[in-house]
Amino acid sequence: FAAGNARVYTIDIYTSDDGENYTLHKAGYKSSGETTDFEKFEIGKKARFIKIVGKGNTVNGWMNIQEVAITKK
Image (cartoon, one colour):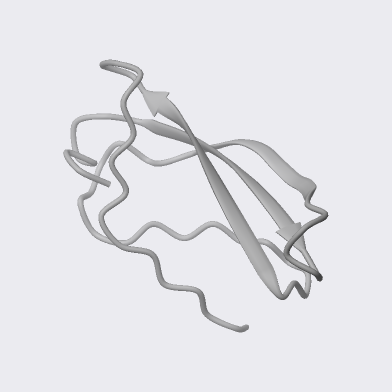
C-alpha cells in the first residue's frame, strides 16, 4: 500500500469460481499501518478469481494498492 507505514487501509475480499458470481469472503481486512512492504491476508479457501475492493484509509477515502501477489499455501 502507498504510505502503508503511515496509513491503515481497509479492503473487502470476494472470491468466485466462475468470475461472475462473487461471494464476500471477508469484510474489513485492515493493513498494519506499519510497512510499505507486502501485507499478508489469508483467504483460506480455493478460488479461481479474487476481487479486492478498497474502502479507503485512515487519512482519506483513497485507495492505492501498488502490487498484489497471490500465493498458494
